[in-house]
Length: 329
Image 1 (cartoon, rainbow, N blue to C red):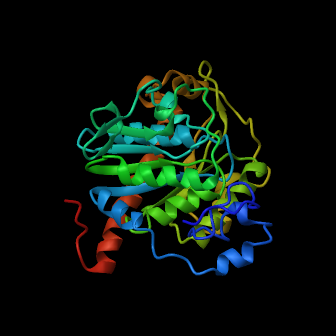
Image 2: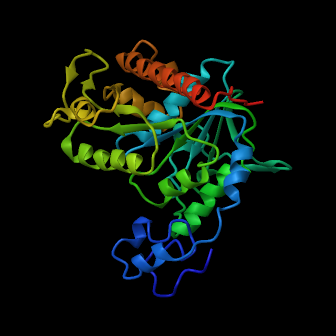
């Protein structure tokens, strides 16, 4: 990739990048039209390397939201915990929230380090069938700030996809930062050869969140990223003592269900706001195991069943379209 011009805006991806003229940093730049029309180099060889590296990963799922603080990382972590309850399945979690890596704490792996092997970086294992990778494992302290331009963040994502020794996985769950920016474009570019099953989109009921999530859905459509469905988090508050339900974030425009119906997307379900979930995340525990009899766990397991069903159908559909069985050996 060519060097970034001296007068370029912050997070400029570079003139020869696949993102040149397309990244969020390019908006408003006087050179956007020129960069987007420049002849680019050939396909990044890393795309084929990543395809080979992830050839034994059956399902790849992105967890997205246009809004921060809606619970993407919480959903990703507990989707991983739920899937890993089946000991015959191998689960991987990739945290690509480069500037705000919260997964190590949520997964109870804060302070762990990554080891280098002959086949690449070894992920950190939460349990025998659940592994994860995060830039949080590469920092000297959880308080260290990652102050990087977009091109460097994209390079880190490339390295995570190409150099982590995931081995055989049934599911690779990718936790993303909020928005529709460089990290998201980099993921779609680098996984274009390996394939992505789809994206789970997370929102909260209020319109301020739904507005940003509509942008995320538009992003998925423009980049041909399949949408598995929409999850409404913090839909109501469940008191742990009296079990009474109260609405904290009023769905003034009908909430995620109405939005999904209007946009023609699948609604996966609603998750309640239970303070025990936040407590488990702070302590690095699975609320599925800690409070298995809660209504939140029941609602969450219903969502997990729909995601698993989608992935199984995705394989059948792909095999029907190609006429060949998908080989993960």
